[in-house]
Length: 111
Length: 143
Image 1 (cartoon, each protein chain N blue to C red):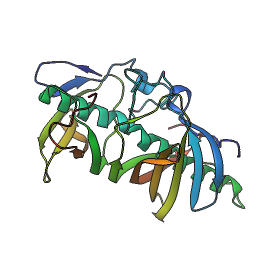
Image 2: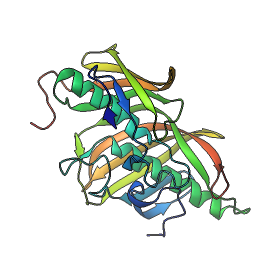
Image 3: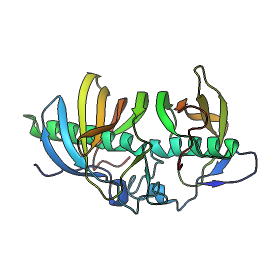
Image 4: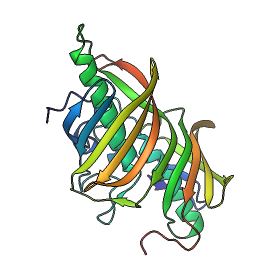
């Protein structure tokens, strides 16, 4: 998945993305975990560093993403401390959404 | 150990490697994240891949149960439609290392089903989650 502008929210799902390899042969669908990876990448771009993910809540996969799709990841503060709500949209329609729960501020992935 | 049932995942997308035991309500399985997996970076597999491991274990349980039924119904492709909750004790999973997966059927109203999944590394819980899945077409049927 490649960012397509500097707004830290838009990505292009490459036609030949390895995320589609074997998922599934003849009917490529972006795995749900790749949606989460997109949301986490948007959070990292916005924060400047990767935070440690400790939980998820109410993640919904509504519309599949396929090769060549361009998506917008919308982030907002979550209802609980250290959480971020994400909304992934493709062609104006919601593809997936949910709440990412992170460790306390200062708890950075890779430290 | 039993052979893996047919799953729609192939290549690096297939994370399940063996079934330890299975019945109509639960499964214990072994999985592994290959270093070539597209989400592996810097030798690390993100903890969210535990969701995929658990989902594949649930799919295997469904496939085994269907195959062993009196009618031998074909396995169906299942899609994760919701993660109700998940907790990650570790930020990463080891790569090229067997992990233990359990999935338990919490409820079902076909084509929907709810599973509680757990992934452990060397017997220590790494993550758990509650997933909802939706059954799709039978495997081998054009989509």
